[in-house]
Image (spheres, helix red, strand yellow):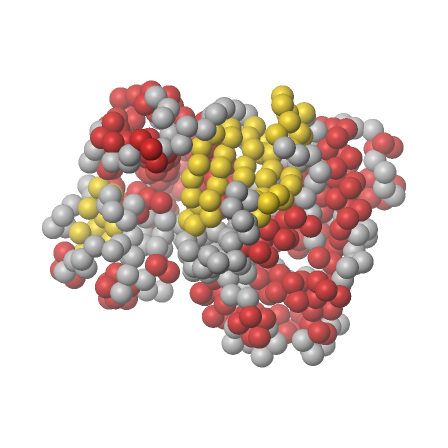
Length: 506
């Protein structure tokens, strides 16, 4: 827990680790900033602190045009917390309020709208509508300052119900008209990308090991759905994939960091091509989950780096992240496909499934041609056509039917313990698969896989006992960051596991 004195010290030292954790409003200027704002530090008496940008906006403060507090990484709390507020924030980030309203959000969480409003306001200083409004304002600014799209089109793409609502919100949040906000960025810096595309930066805090992220995704890239290619500059690798989104589909490109770029640069370059710009905030949020960009690596590495077993690994590679996924249903299918076979075989099998049951893009884009098949499409497919043992076919069709019918939910708003119990009740779904889905599909930062062969090999290489019981005991010291410990051990054991099975390094 941090108090206002600690918050002010963070502001005085311009500590970027707190960006997104709280916001500083300055009563003498009427603006609010991120803690790392480079402006002159305001007097303590003039500072008020808010837990969310929406709360600062609701109190009448406008966003600082110098530090752009609306563009900070999200609070790492929302990755870890499993309570109502944490679950609600994950769903709001995915755009549920814009698509289903507050009633839809409350229904997904199993609470009344009044209870939800009360808890969010008590903790964040703003209810779901205000939090969603702040998200729409940030999207509007992004589109105004990075594209040449007409203002009217931007208003609806950002999720506003009317142009008047859009104009009023932009003036209130940024103290500028939409055209004035656009004029702050020179036209030459705006990107006119064809077919609804745009260029943006995905912010992160602390250090980021992009080599691990890109390598992890490259090893598992499904042909036609994903690929890793040389980036736009020498020494870069770019991850590309197709996206199935609420209003349409898209293609995402995310560049890693070059060898000469610091891991603490603060952002990854991203390009998005969307068939419907209303999907922009959702696409960005899902990419942030995939690359674990809201994590706090200082907290994670600070805990694991002092451990006698993992410490050397942490110091050698700071900023290692725990990748999530853009589509929990896709990941669930791929986890079952990969049971007891090699990573390469699982990728080939997933590619065949995508070829047969996935939707084909109107036009291929590089090596991308397909959208991964939905759980609903696979649930009604003939299981005899799946090239796998009968038991795994039953597990796959049972899982897909449960996902398609809503018997099992895998989204940011679910109770993770409840989802795990529902998954374990399905035939052919065991503890390893459930743990893997919690770690990646549900972005749980505190999952350990004691029976995983990669984890056991990693421990042995570090001179620790590798049996499941000993591994589980050792992992108690790594809470609440055990998912990161798993990735550390996988990375450390990778050279020993060139012929390992999918569920050793998945």
